Image (tube, rainbow, N blue to C red):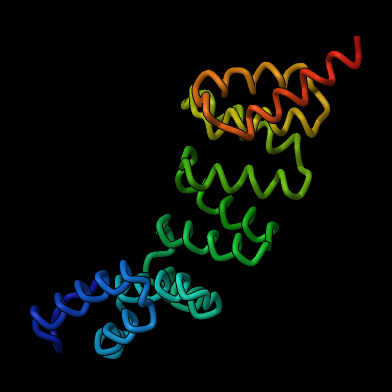
Length: 200
């Protein structure tokens, strides 16, 4: 359950969390975690404190501890999309793309159009060269976010990898209209236009 004050008074509990946010902003993650030690000792089964310590562990680069705290939080709220998103993020940092795929599948069963989960699901599929599957997810998301630069870019890149260069060029042109200063898009368009000239 969400942390409620019993052993710690309201002021001590508030200060522990508040000061941890201040230290996080200053990138003092170890000190931020230390402030929450009394909270986790008092409420080892508390959802909020486990979620918070998972995030701070992630920021420290201590991914094994982050997963341990996140799993504890998930034992309390198994359908917590906010925690599942964070678990996926840990696996992206570890470049475990099959696990990123699996974690985001779990989220999509709960929240089919979750923006973050769909992005990382597509990205993991793309990295694993599962282009057809990634294409389908992109097109699904573009039915509800038709001008999303994120999903249009992914779709254009997937078409490029599938060697459907005409389709890729048209989609990248659309992305450029929506995001004119995107250097990656400009480079893709130049490359694709050069290909077209060479094929003439």
